[in-house]
Amino acid sequence: MHLAMDSIPNSANILLAVIEATPDAIFVKDLNGRYVIVNQAAARFVGGRPADMIGKTDLELYPEETARRFMADDKAALASGAAMSFEGVATSSVGTQAYLVTKGGAYRDANGTILGVYGISHDITELRQAQESLEQTRAALFRSQKMEAVGQLTGGIAHDFNNILMVILGNLELMKQRLPMGDGQTVELIDETLRAIRHGQDLTGDLLAFSRRRQLSPEPVGVNTLVENIVRLLVRTLGANVHITTATSPEAGVAMVDPAALEAAMLNIALNARDAMPEGGTLSIRTSKAEITRAPKTEDDLAIGQYAMVAIEDTGSGMPPEVLARAFEPFFTTKAGGGGSGLGLSMVYGFARQTGGTVQIASEPGRGTTVTIYLPLTSSEPRSIAAATAREVAPLVSRTILVVEDEPAVRTTVRRQLEVLGYTVLVADTAATALPILQGEEHIDVMLTDVVLGAGMNGIDLADAARASRPGLPLILMSGFSAVPEAQARVRALAAPMLSKPWTLSQLETALHTVCPDEPPA
Image 1 (spheres, rainbow, N blue to C red):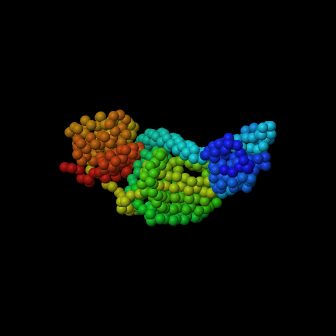
Image 2 (cartoon, one colour):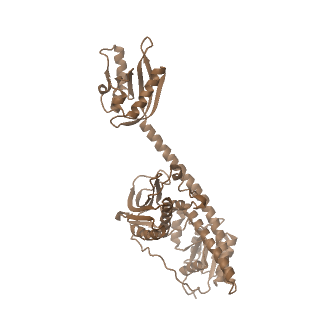
Image 3 (cartoon, rainbow, N blue to C red):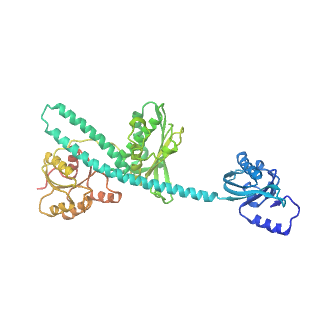
């Protein structure tokens, strides 16, 4: 510490020793704004010694913006003689930054004449950082809980709506089969309605994707190969105004992912990018690897492990903060005139979370948007991602099928579908009704059960009980949405195909051929 006077009383020595030992920055300035007393804490902030500050002004020690702010506070204190207070970020000429809370005011001699100003600055940078980190964690937790609640709601709505679509689709197909030859006008009306149903099915599929209840078939897939295949689709879809570039890394490796779901997610992101670049632009797609070593703090954080990263960046208009904060919310859209359902990015979010990864967005107005999907890596060998080809199936020889479905209209529709296809049908509305049939003497070739049953035992438990009573009984599961994550392992253990509602007659028959041999047992 340095003083501008040659000698001081002993009491002053004691006071100065206390000032010197204080961890807060303490200073005294004269009427000209020159420092006359400073302690070590004040000098450390400007990167020097106390003696280096004595006689200098704020303009010589701080950048002009910070210095002018300090000088304005000093001037107000000298003019009024009142206390001064400053709170905010200060920057020194050597680049040191801190969030300071400063208290002080004018000081006087024995006659009351103002001689200058003094101040004590407390550095609360670490406290502010801790508070900001806590607020960010709270905000992330609130957002996660909000998305989970909305997801449960949309999943339930989509499940019920799929049951409704199941009844409409099934009965329309049966009606079409019963029409007399030559009734082309009625067939045309039915076909138009079926197209509308498929659109409704797509919408409920997006809702289920957001709520993480969509039927996914993850498999080990080479990320770079999959991305290259999807890019070929995007080139045809986005048009000549959008230039696509790719940069793939071999570290992206093999991820556990449903190829069709990732294709749909990337297509949604790319279409949003195209809309953000009405005059054209560049869409850059990159792959790489990320390793997470810290335990997650919220549900949206990634678990510890290795992930493939697929980053999709556009040169479009970007998003302001208030839009970015709501980007993943279902039904939220900035497209005017009903230009979008608001389900595109919410579907991407749900798909990524259901896959065991996550998705992040970075965007600024005028600087474009980057959407990054994280997918869990696996050590398994990649499987072929060639698209499956449709095949014709012949009707099975007459079989007896037990249908377990709690929704009366759906149960009736499924029974009618099976009877039209030539099968003998037994029906049950709950697991409690189905169990006596399974434990009885009646012959059953296949059990088709809904996963979610209205009361008591669910469809997965019923399937386990059926296999206990009838070992090797062929099973088909059906549902309006995917099994909850903790039940998915049990579904895989059953080795039973899953029919997603609504389905067509051909999809139902294909599932039956999957679990049954061509010839019935003798």
